[in-house]
Image 1: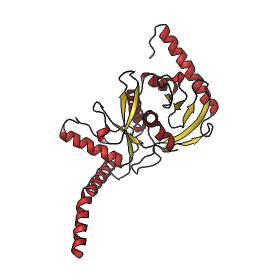
Image 2: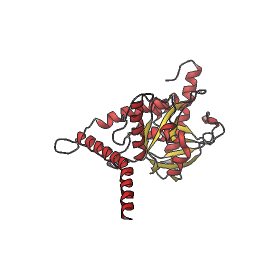
Image 3: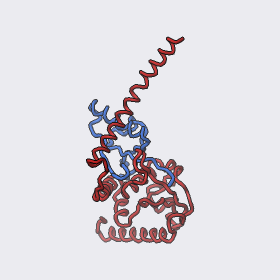
Image 4: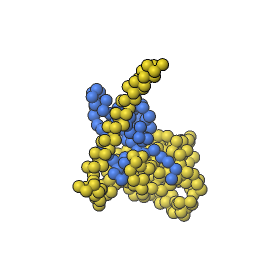
Length: 77
Length: 201
């Protein structure tokens, strides 16, 4: 998510493919270096309830995640 | 001594070179992206449809992330209720100790679902971190999604970062109470629809 633009695709690829994964890791780190927060939308297996899971490392991303959403970190308004 | 200093300096250069190169590459890509948006004389052209398209994309993104009930709530009422995590029965809003009303570009309001008592408002924003115009903000639906993700994933962190006030500083308490009444009516209608066999949208 980018102020003034909304959703912007940063990178996509198959994390099982090494070149793709390197690109994804690079994009992930760059976003976090810029101070963005990263979250993965998740669905509870039992209840089906949706939530988000904050991720701080690339390795924290659940293997079944289809996308990671970066958004500016919250600050007092 | 001089040789040792030279060796140390060389090691420092070698170690920091990849970081500097990465920053320079990111800066160049950012500059190229900005130049692509700018017109032939370097002025950023105003695109009257950009914000509308951004909001449409944001609505689709929000819809794909939140629960069906939350999406319907936002579509019909313009806000989302998020149940506070520090509660004994987190899956049932009616049994929750507290919940939040999430509005686009307005403070998050904490309230007691059972009594409708308003607790506090949390002023929070998601400013542009890329060095761009700080007046630009997320599309309305992205702002709601950012708050939803922050609250459902790490409630404590976002609440700690927010400025907390009694309800009434930015939001009209009468309007929030009216929204809670609208929410209760909306849920009653959906419940009635379910009972007579109409699946709610």
